[in-house]
Image (cartoon, rainbow, N blue to C red):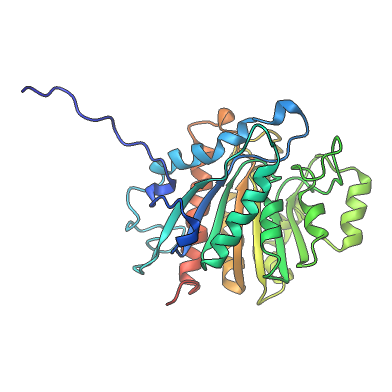
Length: 317
């Protein structure tokens, strides 16, 4: 028999083609990648927005960011796993349900609790910026947690259209949780949903607001010194916190943003000075991307988190 065709080329289904694990009750891993496509929409039109496609887009683009994990990464300082036996898995996406458009928050919280109970570090791909809210809830037994938000916007609205757990209220909701202690909001600039009353509320809480301009002036090392040492940290990254030249595929691009280098320095500093208990990257709108730059950058950020955690001794057995 003559054979003139071959099977279609592989397309990554999971992040970096890591093993897919769909049973969290038997999870055994050091790091778990999880997708959370759905937030709590402000309008019916936002029920399925472009950000819901981001977990898939980042996974597919990860095929382009590394030829193999044994290759030397100059951002990380060597191969990602540094020659160690590290197990990273992809546990898939938290599903939504048409009949209950917010029920996925409960499933997201339960999934993170399972991942943490297994001793794994959860790395979440959103979805809009509402998705960290159930993650914060799942960490209620791990406080006090220092929350670090890299974002162009403050996200301190009490509600929008009566919705209290959407993407403009993330940090306001975090501030109401007793296990969340210090809050650092870095990379803030331009205009967003915050009015004067939200800024005053954030300051009254004691949020440490560091604008992009201030960060540029003082440098990342000085910024890190303001964050207490030896803490337990959660890092939430909104893609619009970075400059649009670095991550163009966002709904609310703001010029003058944080650089990729600053982002990696922040990650390495946080991971090295205490214990990172989780992180997410959200608000990627794949339809607005250029040559998959935003999704690929998100993938590089995730690999840098893993590489930094390996070097900080997070997964010693």
